[in-house]
Image (tube, rainbow, N blue to C red; front, side, top):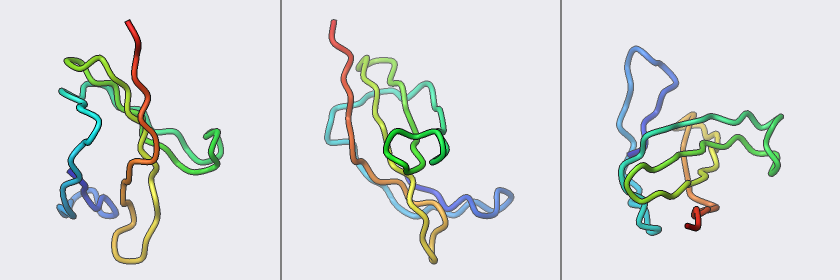
Length: 79
């Protein structure tokens, strides 16, 4: 799910982006500012408990929705 969080007291649901990678049960979230990102873009890293996968989302800025998340990379933990 994607939310506009420009005003934390009034979150707005923007849309739903299904995970094509099979990620199940997101548990841990970590925001990586652009200044610390290897791609130069802000990232949201999500650890998924059930699937054992880690997804990396790029956070984009826009005029209508200050935070829009799209999926550029998917990393999978190998057993």
